[in-house]
Length: 204
Image (cartoon, rainbow, N blue to C red; front, side, top):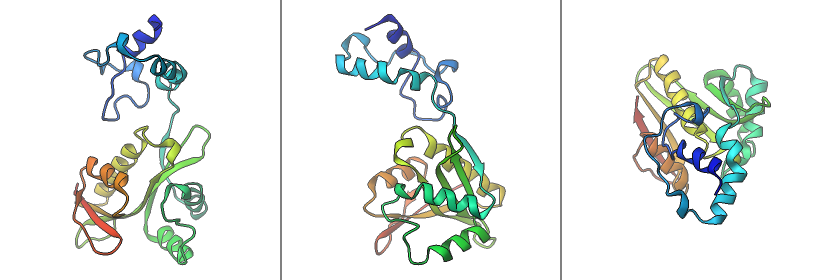
């Protein structure tokens, strides 16, 4: 293993937050060496060397409010492959789009090329219960495990708070164990449910 690889790995930990998303080499986040360098198998070293540039200089992503209907539909269509059940294939898709455009808040995750790779669409207008509801939330599969989902969820929660909400909820397919695990990691409690979906909620 090259000394360069060793030094880089010494500066990078397997963090569980967003602290190192933008540029891990510029943040003082590592207190110790988490990996015994000499014990790494050769195939792992090869993989690290191939991915090193992305680790040091990951692509930049921006979370922006999506204001107009055309941009909302563009994001929904671009990210439709992130869903187990297609959004644009629903019989009531146009009705859903109209409702989202009229009443929902929508935040998009955009790459350096300006293309959407994920989005969150939620309602924060229930002044009685002060409960926000996430209608759609996704990150495209190639962009997952890059902390983008965590950043998008926190941005959504911040926006919901600004609208006076004190909790936020959503529905998730019971069979989607990955999504359920993600939402639990983000502080949601699984309240169960009937049919295909479970309801999850978090105080904010």
